[in-house]
Length: 122
Image (cartoon, rainbow, N blue to C red; front, side, top):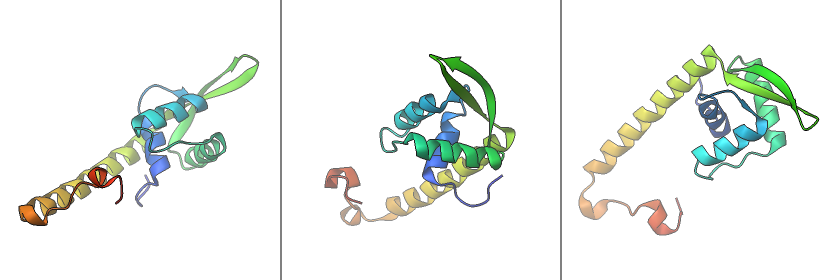
């Protein structure tokens, strides 16, 4: 399990693979959907990340197949990857809880305007 906070692409790739096994293009599409378009992975970035995640034991190759003459490798979350994602999710949940409590303690006039209301500036 990884002790440091996960980088955002790693978090989203693990989240995508928490479902059924996927191949690279499927992971790219799922990450874009899950992140509501905030993260758009390029193939070179994705495959480098997948190699690092396999080496770290976070994900595993599930199977390979040939589609339209091209080899397609499917990946799945490993037991270590699942535990890492669960730990990161809990860390983020605690962060949100602390920030929410602090924001709730502000007097109404001192509460900041939501970033989206400011045109996404944060």
